[in-house]
Length: 374
Image (tube, rainbow, N blue to C red; front, top):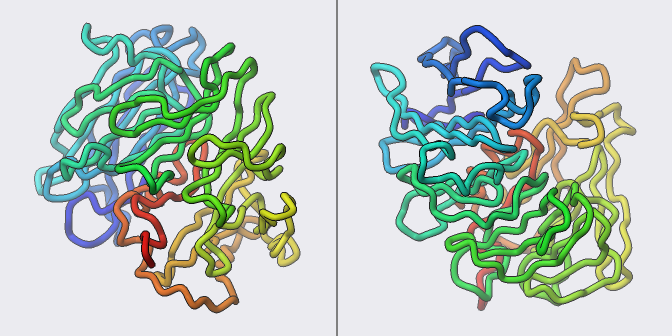
């Protein structure tokens, strides 16, 4: 995870020393973003009894997530996480001149938050969902408030995909689109109020929903369209209306590439346009022709993508097939749409920060790209 954790205007790099580790110490370390020198080190969230995390052989005890969040301190806080299949623990840390100081600790085994066990995802999201000026952690099917107390849990359980943003601009506040693994589920596709956890619409499922995306692909419908895998098909509006009987085959990333208010799809080394009238995909770019390659096997992610150059369109950073070089791609197409850098949007900036944590998820905005009336 990278972010400005000490408020000096420079990015720092944070990572847990991970692996399938069943004994010995583990640490949370902070490295200076400019020099690479270690700035601070504290013990990582203790593994305790391995079986408490969901199995006895060390897979689920080694499920780590991390985020940067504005929790009211002078800089961004580091939020370190362990576990999401059963026992769930999070710790928030602030970096100062004397090292790391713990801000709060959350545990589903504290006698208060038992309903939060087993609700985490392979990813998380961060944003100010209750409008108090501080960030909350959307931890899969539950949310942790900025003070480390549980905000809500939906009880829908673990999942593989999670999207937080202003997905329905007709509603106040932020929304979450998530997919879930437990079966059967009353809402394996779930669109909820990010502040309260209230279900706005959902689709029942009888299979593990392994992928799901929320992105504005169709200008006829305000907000993000949603589609997912797992025994159901279709492209749905932010209000839960069925738009197409089949959605895009690509269920990976979404990107602002061509300079339009709607997004394209990013999958492997390809950037793909969605023809909303025909309900069909068209490849705009395949960087594999230049020797580029994606990461994470079937997840097929770039090294990073986002508004890296600051012109509001998004760029893609791929590696070479031999892993020796990085290739940065930017759109060649001009745009008449004038907007500030997407990095000025706090939800977007944090979604870029934690993009590579767990199962990579697309960037999202906390305010519409094109405000109402523009």
